[in-house]
Length: 265
Image (cartoon, rainbow, N blue to C red; front, side, top):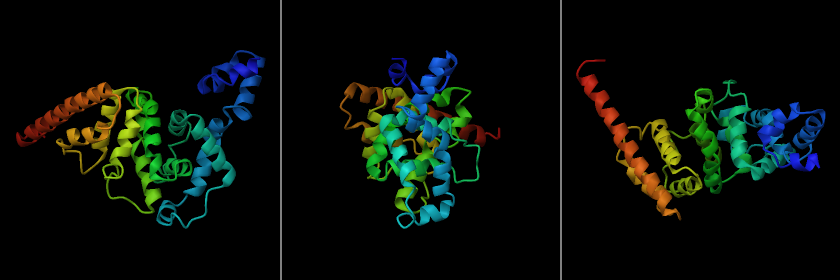
Protein backbone atom coordinates (compact mmCIF):
# COMPACT_ATOMS: atom_id res chain seq x y z
CA UNK A 1 0.00 0.00 0.00
CA UNK A 2 2.82 2.39 0.86
CA UNK A 3 4.53 1.56 -2.44
CA UNK A 4 1.39 2.41 -4.41
CA UNK A 5 1.06 5.76 -2.62
CA UNK A 6 4.72 6.69 -3.04
CA UNK A 7 4.48 6.21 -6.80
CA UNK A 8 2.29 9.33 -6.98
CA UNK A 9 4.10 11.62 -4.58
CA UNK A 10 6.19 14.50 -5.90
CA UNK A 11 9.63 13.57 -7.20
CA UNK A 12 11.35 16.01 -4.83
CA UNK A 13 9.73 14.38 -1.80
CA UNK A 14 10.46 10.84 -2.96
CA UNK A 15 14.10 11.60 -3.75
CA UNK A 16 14.61 13.68 -0.61
CA UNK A 17 12.87 13.83 2.76
CA UNK A 18 10.81 10.65 2.36
CA UNK A 19 13.95 8.54 2.68
CA UNK A 20 14.48 9.76 6.23
CA UNK A 21 11.01 8.98 7.58
CA UNK A 22 11.52 5.28 8.23
CA UNK A 23 13.22 2.18 6.90
CA UNK A 24 10.01 1.24 5.07
CA UNK A 25 9.62 4.58 3.31
CA UNK A 26 13.33 4.60 2.41
CA UNK A 27 12.91 1.21 0.76
CA UNK A 28 9.80 2.10 -1.22
CA UNK A 29 11.27 5.47 -2.21
CA UNK A 30 14.36 3.75 -3.59
CA UNK A 31 12.14 1.34 -5.50
CA UNK A 32 10.08 4.19 -6.97
CA UNK A 33 13.28 5.93 -8.09
CA UNK A 34 15.04 2.90 -9.54
CA UNK A 35 12.24 0.67 -10.83
CA UNK A 36 9.01 2.59 -10.46
CA UNK A 37 7.34 5.68 -11.86
CA UNK A 38 10.24 8.06 -11.24
CA UNK A 39 12.95 5.84 -12.75
CA UNK A 40 13.36 7.83 -16.00
CA UNK A 41 13.51 11.17 -14.14
CA UNK A 42 16.17 9.87 -11.79
CA UNK A 43 18.09 8.44 -14.74
CA UNK A 44 18.17 11.86 -16.40
CA UNK A 45 19.28 13.47 -13.13
CA UNK A 46 22.03 10.98 -12.35
CA UNK A 47 23.30 9.74 -15.72
CA UNK A 48 21.83 12.09 -18.31
CA UNK A 49 24.71 14.57 -18.39
CA UNK A 50 27.28 11.84 -19.09
CA UNK A 51 25.17 10.53 -21.97
CA UNK A 52 24.64 13.99 -23.44
CA UNK A 53 28.34 14.82 -23.04
CA UNK A 54 29.35 11.65 -24.89
CA UNK A 55 27.13 12.64 -27.82
CA UNK A 56 28.07 16.33 -27.91
CA UNK A 57 31.69 16.14 -26.75
CA UNK A 58 32.91 18.19 -29.69
CA UNK A 59 30.42 20.98 -30.26
CA UNK A 60 31.79 21.98 -33.67
CA UNK A 61 31.82 18.44 -35.02
CA UNK A 62 28.47 17.60 -33.48
CA UNK A 63 26.53 20.65 -34.65
CA UNK A 64 28.38 20.97 -37.95
CA UNK A 65 27.71 17.38 -38.98
CA UNK A 66 24.19 17.03 -37.64
CA UNK A 67 22.26 14.55 -39.72
CA UNK A 68 25.38 12.60 -40.62
CA UNK A 69 26.63 11.82 -37.14
CA UNK A 70 25.97 8.62 -35.24
CA UNK A 71 22.61 8.51 -33.44
CA UNK A 72 22.61 8.67 -29.64
CA UNK A 73 22.47 5.35 -27.73
CA UNK A 74 19.03 3.77 -28.05
CA UNK A 75 18.44 2.68 -24.45
CA UNK A 76 19.32 6.02 -22.80
CA UNK A 77 17.35 7.86 -25.47
CA UNK A 78 14.29 5.77 -24.66
CA UNK A 79 14.58 6.69 -20.97
CA UNK A 80 15.07 10.36 -21.92
CA UNK A 81 11.81 10.25 -23.88
CA UNK A 82 10.00 8.48 -21.04
CA UNK A 83 11.10 11.20 -18.64
CA UNK A 84 10.02 13.94 -21.04
CA UNK A 85 6.62 12.33 -21.53
CA UNK A 86 6.16 11.95 -17.78
CA UNK A 87 6.87 15.55 -16.68
CA UNK A 88 8.61 18.01 -19.05
CA UNK A 89 8.66 20.84 -16.49
CA UNK A 90 10.36 18.61 -13.92
CA UNK A 91 12.88 17.47 -16.53
CA UNK A 92 13.82 21.07 -17.35
CA UNK A 93 14.37 21.71 -13.65
CA UNK A 94 16.50 18.57 -13.40
CA UNK A 95 18.68 19.77 -16.29
CA UNK A 96 19.21 23.05 -14.45
CA UNK A 97 19.81 21.83 -10.91
CA UNK A 98 21.02 18.23 -11.11
CA UNK A 99 23.39 18.52 -14.04
CA UNK A 100 26.80 19.95 -13.14
CA UNK A 101 26.85 23.14 -15.17
CA UNK A 102 30.07 24.18 -13.44
CA UNK A 103 31.74 21.94 -16.00
CA UNK A 104 32.38 24.77 -18.44
CA UNK A 105 34.53 22.91 -20.95
CA UNK A 106 31.55 22.76 -23.30
CA UNK A 107 29.70 25.27 -25.41
CA UNK A 108 27.11 26.83 -23.13
CA UNK A 109 23.88 24.84 -23.23
CA UNK A 110 25.02 22.25 -25.77
CA UNK A 111 24.59 19.23 -23.50
CA UNK A 112 21.10 20.34 -22.57
CA UNK A 113 20.49 20.88 -26.29
CA UNK A 114 21.54 17.28 -26.97
CA UNK A 115 18.89 16.11 -24.52
CA UNK A 116 16.26 18.32 -26.15
CA UNK A 117 17.30 17.11 -29.61
CA UNK A 118 16.70 13.51 -28.51
CA UNK A 119 13.26 14.18 -27.04
CA UNK A 120 12.17 16.91 -29.49
CA UNK A 121 13.97 16.30 -32.81
CA UNK A 122 12.08 18.96 -34.80
CA UNK A 123 10.87 22.55 -34.49
CA UNK A 124 7.39 21.22 -33.74
CA UNK A 125 8.68 20.61 -30.22
CA UNK A 126 9.42 24.28 -29.50
CA UNK A 127 6.01 25.00 -27.89
CA UNK A 128 6.42 22.03 -25.56
CA UNK A 129 9.90 23.12 -24.55
CA UNK A 130 8.84 26.72 -23.93
CA UNK A 131 5.78 25.67 -21.93
CA UNK A 132 7.98 23.41 -19.79
CA UNK A 133 10.30 26.31 -18.88
CA UNK A 134 7.87 28.27 -16.69
CA UNK A 135 8.62 26.62 -13.36
CA UNK A 136 12.40 26.88 -13.68
CA UNK A 137 12.27 30.38 -15.16
CA UNK A 138 10.29 31.54 -12.11
CA UNK A 139 13.15 30.41 -9.84
CA UNK A 140 15.57 32.92 -11.38
CA UNK A 141 14.32 35.59 -8.95
CA UNK A 142 15.45 33.62 -5.89
CA UNK A 143 18.95 34.62 -4.71
CA UNK A 144 20.04 31.03 -4.13
CA UNK A 145 19.15 30.10 -7.72
CA UNK A 146 19.81 33.26 -9.72
CA UNK A 147 23.37 32.62 -10.94
CA UNK A 148 22.91 28.87 -11.20
CA UNK A 149 19.79 28.99 -13.35
CA UNK A 150 20.71 31.87 -15.61
CA UNK A 151 24.15 30.46 -16.41
CA UNK A 152 22.64 28.76 -19.43
CA UNK A 153 18.87 28.88 -19.03
CA UNK A 154 16.79 29.24 -21.01
CA UNK A 155 18.06 31.04 -24.10
CA UNK A 156 21.56 29.62 -24.65
CA UNK A 157 20.04 26.16 -24.18
CA UNK A 158 17.28 26.85 -26.71
CA UNK A 159 19.69 28.49 -29.09
CA UNK A 160 22.02 25.48 -28.99
CA UNK A 161 19.05 23.16 -29.60
CA UNK A 162 18.10 25.23 -32.65
CA UNK A 163 21.68 25.07 -33.93
CA UNK A 164 21.67 21.29 -33.54
CA UNK A 165 18.46 21.06 -35.57
CA UNK A 166 19.82 23.36 -38.28
CA UNK A 167 23.28 21.80 -38.35
CA UNK A 168 25.10 25.13 -38.13
CA UNK A 169 25.78 27.97 -35.70
CA UNK A 170 23.57 31.06 -35.49
CA UNK A 171 24.85 34.61 -35.45
CA UNK A 172 22.06 35.85 -33.16
CA UNK A 173 18.99 34.69 -31.30
CA UNK A 174 16.87 32.29 -33.38
CA UNK A 175 13.52 33.15 -31.85
CA UNK A 176 12.15 35.81 -34.17
CA UNK A 177 11.89 34.09 -37.52
CA UNK A 178 8.52 33.61 -39.18
CA UNK A 179 8.82 29.93 -38.32
CA UNK A 180 9.45 30.30 -34.60
CA UNK A 181 7.24 33.25 -33.62
CA UNK A 182 3.89 31.42 -33.52
CA UNK A 183 5.51 28.38 -31.88
CA UNK A 184 6.87 30.47 -29.01
CA UNK A 185 3.47 32.09 -28.60
CA UNK A 186 1.83 28.69 -28.34
CA UNK A 187 4.31 27.65 -25.66
CA UNK A 188 3.83 30.83 -23.62
CA UNK A 189 0.05 30.47 -23.79
CA UNK A 190 0.42 27.40 -21.57
CA UNK A 191 2.14 29.42 -18.82
CA UNK A 192 -0.11 29.93 -15.82
CA UNK A 193 1.42 33.33 -15.02
CA UNK A 194 1.02 35.89 -17.83
CA UNK A 195 3.19 38.41 -15.93
CA UNK A 196 6.01 35.88 -15.82
CA UNK A 197 5.57 35.28 -19.55
CA UNK A 198 6.14 39.00 -20.10
CA UNK A 199 9.34 38.76 -18.06
CA UNK A 200 10.40 35.93 -20.37
CA UNK A 201 10.15 38.40 -23.24
CA UNK A 202 12.22 40.95 -21.35
CA UNK A 203 14.92 38.38 -20.65
CA UNK A 204 14.94 37.38 -24.29
CA UNK A 205 15.41 41.00 -25.40
CA UNK A 206 18.28 41.34 -22.91
CA UNK A 207 19.86 38.19 -24.34
CA UNK A 208 19.54 39.22 -28.00
CA UNK A 209 22.26 41.60 -29.16
CA UNK A 210 20.17 42.77 -32.12
CA UNK A 211 17.04 43.51 -30.07
CA UNK A 212 18.39 44.87 -26.81
CA UNK A 213 17.62 48.48 -27.82
CA UNK A 214 14.72 47.87 -30.22
CA UNK A 215 12.04 49.00 -27.77
CA UNK A 216 9.30 49.32 -30.41
CA UNK A 217 9.59 45.58 -31.06
CA UNK A 218 8.26 44.72 -27.60
CA UNK A 219 4.66 45.49 -28.54
CA UNK A 220 4.96 44.06 -32.05
CA UNK A 221 6.32 40.69 -30.99
CA UNK A 222 4.05 40.48 -27.95
CA UNK A 223 1.02 40.80 -30.22
CA UNK A 224 2.36 38.20 -32.62
CA UNK A 225 2.93 35.82 -29.74
CA UNK A 226 -0.48 36.33 -28.12
CA UNK A 227 -2.82 36.91 -31.09
CA UNK A 228 -3.94 33.28 -31.17
CA UNK A 229 -4.34 32.76 -27.42
CA UNK A 230 -7.75 31.38 -26.54
CA UNK A 231 -7.76 33.10 -23.15
CA UNK A 232 -8.07 36.74 -24.18
CA UNK A 233 -8.00 37.92 -20.57
CA UNK A 234 -4.58 36.32 -20.13
CA UNK A 235 -3.47 37.86 -23.42
CA UNK A 236 -4.58 41.28 -22.16
CA UNK A 237 -2.58 40.90 -18.95
CA UNK A 238 0.45 39.79 -20.96
CA UNK A 239 0.23 42.73 -23.39
CA UNK A 240 -0.26 45.26 -20.58
CA UNK A 241 2.78 43.96 -18.70
CA UNK A 242 4.89 43.99 -21.86
CA UNK A 243 3.86 47.62 -22.39
CA UNK A 244 4.90 48.48 -18.85
CA UNK A 245 8.24 46.73 -19.33
CA UNK A 246 8.83 48.59 -22.61
CA UNK A 247 8.31 51.92 -20.87
CA UNK A 248 10.59 50.91 -18.02
CA UNK A 249 13.50 49.70 -20.14
CA UNK A 250 13.28 52.63 -22.54
CA UNK A 251 13.30 55.08 -19.60
CA UNK A 252 16.35 53.34 -18.12
CA UNK A 253 18.13 53.49 -21.46
CA UNK A 254 17.34 57.20 -21.81
CA UNK A 255 18.64 57.88 -18.30
CA UNK A 256 21.87 56.01 -19.01
CA UNK A 257 22.35 57.94 -22.25
CA UNK A 258 21.77 61.24 -20.44
CA UNK A 259 24.35 60.34 -17.77
CA UNK A 260 26.86 59.35 -20.46
CA UNK A 261 26.38 62.59 -22.39
CA UNK A 262 26.60 64.57 -19.15
CA UNK A 263 30.03 63.08 -18.47
CA UNK A 264 29.08 61.11 -15.35
CA UNK A 265 30.70 57.90 -16.66
